Image 1 (cartoon, each protein chain N blue to C red):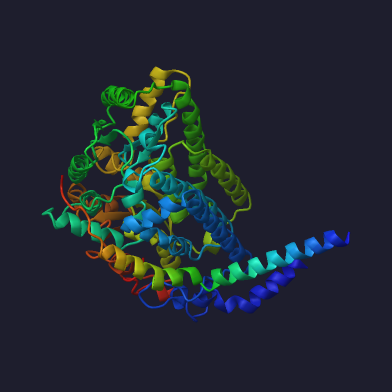
Image 2: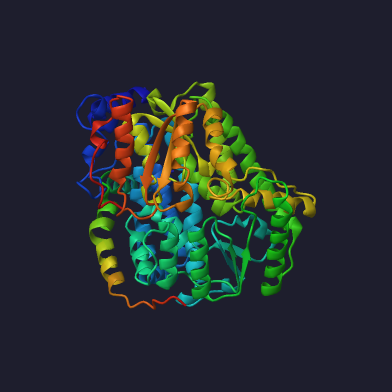
Length: 533
Length: 57
């Protein structure tokens, strides 16, 4: 009876469903937007059940944000007043909406489970950092925080029971450029106004701009930097170090890390970093504490490996940005420190198993191509995997960021644990994919083959000097191996150089000219979203 | 019994009003329109007028 009522409402309101509109030539995903802005006239109608799932998730995220403000009201207000990047967090709801356009059924449920874990963790972290930011008056935990570089996995720091590792660049730069494409150009301009060349990686330029604009929260007594994965990253590390002016230990992990000889060096480096923190913070490292969190990370990685088995089939509802953004955040930022992510993973794997048993195909089975995404989706266009599925039926099965350190950490023997942590940390963001040696770059074909992909999307950061060198080589290999291969140009965090539409055009041209395919939704082939967050 | 029914009725009515209010805000995309057209422009005006301590070291 209940199902019949819902079916009848769905039938009556189906003309508002953008998927139905696209199928019947009466509009599509873009029809409900005001031009350029990315502001929707109304939210996506997905049928009664899925709209309720989306509404409930929206409410849950709203509650997390209310909790953030309630937990540190003065600090949050001061933060909004002080930091330009804090204003950009107001775009979070719009960001989540566009990430999951066209999602229905199991893929929608999983997407929101994953997204809520991120929102919950981030809002808590923002409140914690602002409430202890010396610039805003400081707090009781200021001296117990350890600012560290965001590309250094913080798991090894959990051995310090009373300290709180905070990836320094994550809040003011790395996460927020996903939410708002217009925030980083401001910081890039600040950096360039001091003479920084305009052709360096825009992520590094933006971080430098945040430092020069005096917009990093000031926390902790000493910091951990790292030998960043490229020359521009090294430069920004130095600029930040000079401006922040704290005692600093550069955790210089082995860059070419596939050779066994590299690991003892990285292992010693982690031991030295631990000794530095013990000295600066006057605390003692507790291996049992590390083992506790390593066990959580091991569980996450065990579940991740099981997810990969399902991803190799067409019956996997953990797809696109719901997979890639979650894994990136859960690995690089949470890194075993938050049991809520384990809880989320357990729930998600249950849904995945069920979907597989039911032979459930996401996006109503409209996927035409299975793609492996190699490269960080240009961070100002995080919903690119969503667009490419909705427009051309290309399902991003896995992103390179998801393949980071998945070795297990020993939870009994400190000597073995630190060795495992070294290997785990060597396989971190970018080291594992782009600058860890040719074998790691060239691994893309093996990954794509193992996940039964017929397509490889290679994000081409036009300011990345290292990766520009392999452009032609990758094209030749794609041809030899028989993959559909698309280079997607982007400028990482600067949407002024390569716009979202420029990125879409790389795909549009290939799909229409080379493959001669028709779009699933013609309203999103070409549109102007230049004023959108 | 009457009191329980009365309280139950009030709780149900409050829940219904809360649902109607929040669902209306949700489906009309109200909070995003407010943020995009009102709050962010005001905040940006404030950020643009800030005097910041800009330097390399």
